[in-house]
Length: 271
Image (cartoon, rainbow, N blue to C red; front, side):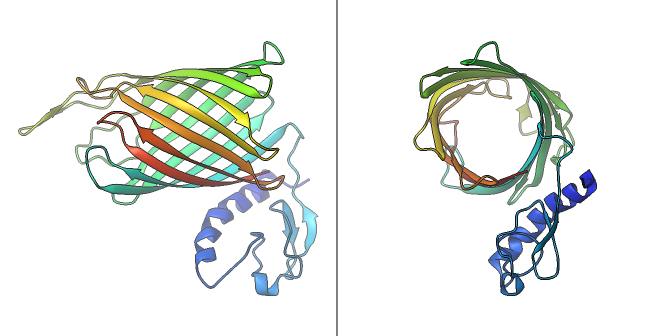
């Protein structure tokens, strides 16, 4: 059994290798050996390989009930009330242990740079075979650099309920975010923050053995006092490519003037 250090090294290597795929270098199985020299082109992310790309040992998680996934995302946003578009990349790492999930999520924006970083802990309850309840708590770290130096740590509590009705899943959830950012009192404008509430509900189903799709309605109160609620309708898809690789993709349609439209694509690897 190998240490977590070896596993983490491989998860760090993945985002570093991704840009190389867009250039002359190509390593389809992410084992560190270029495809043109790889004699074993289908080794998994948990394989330790030799110089020829062939497995000599396999990384093993400490227990079978522990899993990790690494997700890289690309998101394009059409800003509300404008024709401008913004692009951001995301990095998400999830650690699963029994009914607990620990998540790290960070975004990097095309013009603004690094956004806030979220660390979340979630616990899932299963009162019955058809019903599940999730309870979560998040810390939102101020890694976004504000020109006003007013960005502080925020906190969020969340809950979600899912009911499985034959092949159809019915779900709803809510969250409450404590916004601690300092108000801005400037000569040209004032910004006053408030705590934010979110409510969503939707329906989902497996359209095939590999593809799960859902439609979701979302309503969020503004973080600015006097701001309009953000309302949207989204289509979410999760496609399992093989036992390890998966993709998530979808579209978010803003339903009022304050809401933006979004198109996103994520690629993930499950350990």
